[in-house]
Image (cartoon, rainbow, N blue to C red; front, side, top):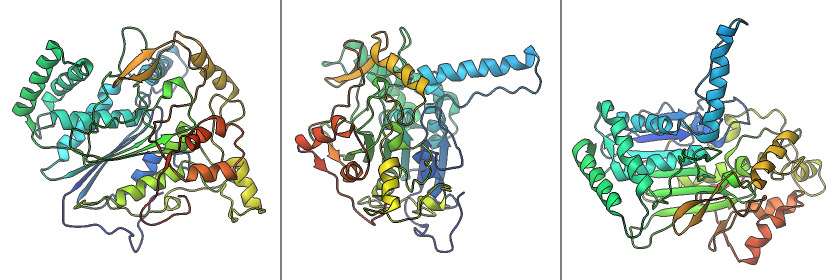
Length: 445
């Protein structure tokens, strides 16, 4: 659990802009109290939450809010629990509570923001999609004045309608009309010149729900320009599922330059964003590496007048690891062999690689049947496609992708029979950039 240290590694600063920190967890994710917590929870635990100039917000993932209670076995008391389970399942599948998640974060920022404050937003998976959408909403619409909560839902309708209609080239008459309305709404009700200082994402996906169903499309076609001054995106190179296509950023060189880093890491979706527990004898999780990278990137932002304050920079100070192996990971040692066996990426589409037998079959059904859509990036829009089926295809690597050096070390020190067929050789053959780290080094880097 979090605890204060006698000598904080990052002292709180009484001067400079205040920091407003919002953390959005992935679908179905919430606090677990052990190493299987996501990197979003771990970042929240590591922050100095008693700093007077820093405000914190954590939001569990989509599909975790509704819970029924039942103290007896009769039908009348069991029904609320059954109903909440159905609502939770539907929410996780199609993201029906997406609006509520975005607006809850928006209202937190609206309540505490003062001119000059720095807004930091972190997110994982569909929580990263929520974080990115919120950042775009703040950038394009602004923040309503404090105490104006009655206008929040009108703000949502204004921005959501605009997002649904944009990305036409040239803009349609409807899009121009909606943009004019948005600008008038912003001028009338919102505070000007509000932006997000830092946006930190772990494997952001490009859909709100796990399924896109007819007449209920909650994803947005447009891929907006980066909506923050500094953006860091840790992306999975081994994830293969069609419903987890990454939402990468597109840069517009004609606009103001943005400090953007998208770096690819070893592992599948949850190997990057967290959620797996330690196996017996395992010393570190693969997700520790992108977590450490994200923290170092936050600490080494150039030109920041007021940086986030942390009570600790060591995730082991806030997470209890019961199965950790204490030995050195050197060739010929037991610890090295343990790493070879345990520090390999999980694969939801492969039996024996971290997923239950039945779930592997279920995920393959989604991969094979053309009735389920996937979103493909085509000319700046996410376009739903059914054919050809995804069939577990690897993610496409951008021509200028940055590969974190830990990816190569993981390939050398673990048994990855399928790694070279899932992006690594492809990256080498195409001469991908290797991302270099800055700031204090860590054994997890």
